[in-house]
Structure formats: C-alpha cells, structure tokens
Length: 447
Image (spheres, rainbow, N blue to C red):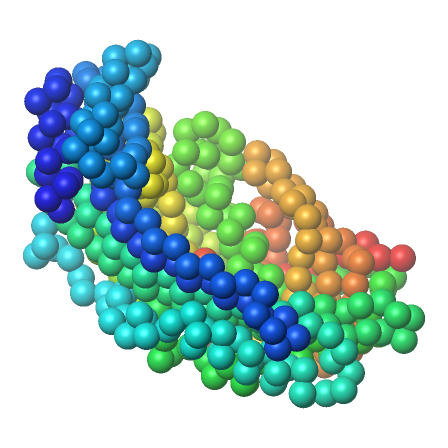
C-alpha cells in the first residue's frame, strides 16, 4: 500500500490529473509427474507495479518489476510521457469519487488460505504421484499416462487511486489434474482426465479418488466412433457447458457491446434464452474462485443479474464502458498487471435447476452427451456456433457407446432458447461454471 501511495503522489505531482497504481506480489508453484517420475518442478515469485495515468483526457499505462528508487521514478516518468503522446479520449476518466468503496463496504469472502504455504514442492509431487498411481492401478487397460499436475498460486494486490481509493486483497488457489491413457482395439490412443481445484487446500478432493475417476472417464472412451448425422437433443456436462457459458460471457462484456462485436448488442430487456436460464455474475460467494471485495477501479463488488429467466437484464461494464453506453458501471472492472483496466467476469454462473443430471439423461430417449469440445468455431457478431465434440450416445435414457469426431452446430441465440433442462450439479471449481444442461435439438454432423 505504501508503494502505491508513493507512486500516485509522484504522478500527481508530475502533472497527472488522475493516477492509479496497483502493486502486486505473488508466488506460483507447478509440478508434474509422469509414470511416477518428476517431469517438472517450477516455482516463481513476482512483485510489480502497474500505473495508469490521465493528463486531461490523454491516457497511458506503464509497468515495472524494478521496485528500486530509480525504477519507480522511471515508471512515473514513462507513464506521463506516454500520456502526453496519446490521442485524447473524450470518454477517459476514473470512476466518480462518490462511487468508490471503503473497507466498511467490503464483504469478507475468505479467499485466502493461510495453510496454502504448507504445500511445498515435495508435498505437491507426493500428491501428483499418488493421484497418477491411483489412475494406473485402477485397471490394467490404463496402459500409459500423460501425467498428473499440481499447481498452487498465492498472491495479493494493493490498489491506490488519486480519487481516494485504497484497498488490498489476497487470495489462494490450488488444482490437481490427472491424464491417463488407454488403447483401443485398433491401436488408437484414448485420453481422459479428471481434476479438482479449490481456494483452500483442505477442500481439494482426495488425490486417490481424482486418479480413479480420471481412469474411469478414460476407460469410458474405449470403442468411440462416429454416429450418423442427425438433429437430436444434446446434453452438455459441466466441463463442456462451461465453454458454452464462456461464449455468453464474452457477448455481454461491455467492450463487445460498444464495439458492436456481439450479437447481444441492443437487446437489453429482450428474451435471449429459455425461461430456465438465469445467469449471474456474483463476486460475493464465499471461497469461490472469482470472488473479490472490490473491482479494478475500487467500486464495491456486487452481484449482477445478467440473464433473468431468459431475459437479458444487464451487460457487464466498467466506468469507461458505462460512459460509452450511457449506463452506470456494474463494478465489473478488472486491472491487469500492466496497470490497464478492462472488463471481466467474476463468478459467472448458470444457476442450477432441481433435477439431477442422471434424471435429465433418463428422460432423453436418444441424444448426444457432450463431455469435450474442440476448435474455436464461434462468431460473436452473428452468434453462429460450430465445434468438434466427443462424448456418449444416449439411448433409451442411458449413456451408450462413446462418440468421437462429430461436429455440433447451432446459432448461440437458438441454443440458449432451446435449453429445456438444467440440472442441479453446479460445482464452483472455476470462475465460469455451469451445471449439466440439455438443448432440445442441435445439428450433429457425423458420418
């Protein structure tokens, strides 16, 4: 915080009308084992300052990891010089001072695990070895492995602005993923995976069970084949559904709206999805991966209702995007390590329904259950969606043989409108999360 105060004071003294400094520090650990042997051990720490200044309506950002007196002085000089060279932007400016939050506005979110430091490289390797061994021992048909990885992140950041904001936040995150391999009768390799991630180390799923589940998911892929092209119901599991929800997130981002690069531009208040679809962006969930007390500009975090029972209720905006669109900020600003400000989601969630995923599958006579998608076939301007997919054929309400090398396609607008079932299995492993859901009909291209 002290460094932030100093940098802001220097920038204002040098002529900035607005100065915002973010000071970050963090430590990251990654380990990977393969066939029981360590393949990667990587540990790094970082400290850096990002600075955004405005001289009138001229804006610049600068960044340094040199925290010496000379480095800090250079950071301020560079930012001011860049601002004077930039084109004026009539929408530039920080948030209104009365919108800035203080400590009394912040919700305690429990995002920092003080025990995360106990996860040393040695202990992380032990976790990875046990998880991979559990997968390989599960069944003799698990013939190889692409390894098991553990990652741990611990970090904190302070934000100080000339508008009067001072705040500090910190967080931790840990993940474990296992990737076994099996081999089909034609010699084709089948790869599967399973993973767990949490803010708190003690809440990470048991490493042996993660390995066994990874093996089970891999073995299910044996005998995968194409199916005949048809239009049929498609059920997305939580991992595949998260990818769909990520597309929605990109289309409600205020930057996409004012640039008119989203098919949802100009549709606020209109029906954009099935009545079963309610989407929120909620940074106030205790211990969730995207939770935060304030946004990248110092506004208190708040829960935003984005899609309310199928009706588009809000875009996600920072101060700049709000001025562009003539709307208030939704406290959705994010600030990168470079000091620049953009718009991001926090915990972007498709709200769960009441029936189980098993019940949703059971009431589907024939369809496709998608577990993975490949490629980048999405046009945000038109909403056209087409991706390679794999999963399982649903026959008589149960998962049948594995399916691979098919393509699923439908305009995203229609896809959301055709959601006719949302399950209850929401799991907040990631900041964009969806439960299992069903689309009544999509084009599936196979043979």
